[in-house]
Amino acid sequence: MVSVKVIGLISVLAAMILPTKNQLFVNTDKPDWDEMYNNHFANPVIQWRSFIGILVQWVASFAAWVLLGAVWAQIRGDQYDYNLNTTVLFNYVVSDTKATQNTIKAVGFGAIAIIIFQKLASKGSPIPVPQKVDTLRGRREAGWKDGWETREDEILQTSNVNSDQTSQKLKYGKESDPEQVPYSRVKRHSSHYQTFTEILIDALNQNLEPNGIGRIFFLNTVQAAAQFIFWLACTLLPRF
Image (cartoon, rainbow, N blue to C red; front, side, top):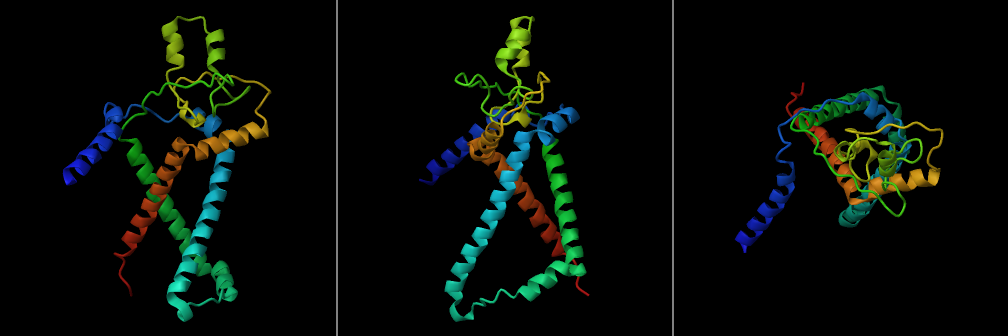
């Protein structure tokens, strides 16, 4: 029984590693600043995706702590302190000492997260992923529309090169994540943009589809690792 579980675990790990083995420890890509600005920070879909993510994580975190508090109250019974004590909370907010220590934590968490992100990025290069096109709508599920979207049919119409060159244009990118189309993106400019509804649907797709959930899990894992490493280092500090 144990051997079956081990074989299953090895199979899962192999399925995860084999597609990436050729790109591991081959760091040939460089930051694309234009890509970062136009297709991430200035991208309205990414902006709304982030707003939604921030709100969901804030509500989920608060709800989780309230739920755990209710469970702990049942465990502790009469020994549980139900007093919110708003005076203590107010003092926490306006205290210079608390503000400084929270600033140090924020800087520490951020610095460690930066190191983790950069170290992970140095371990390999992005893998070319074929794009999927939604034929029912004539565009990628989470791509840009009009002035922002690069459509496959438009690339084919405007391209007079041979099929190999056209394939090279369509070679890179990733469905449901416009920030993952940096490698051979064809840029277009227009005064027309997506409607707010389309932007919102694309943002929800990028957060709630499996690929988006995986991305959020990765980011939260790095954040949690940075916080854990920070506090682990704090355990080494001497007390005076």
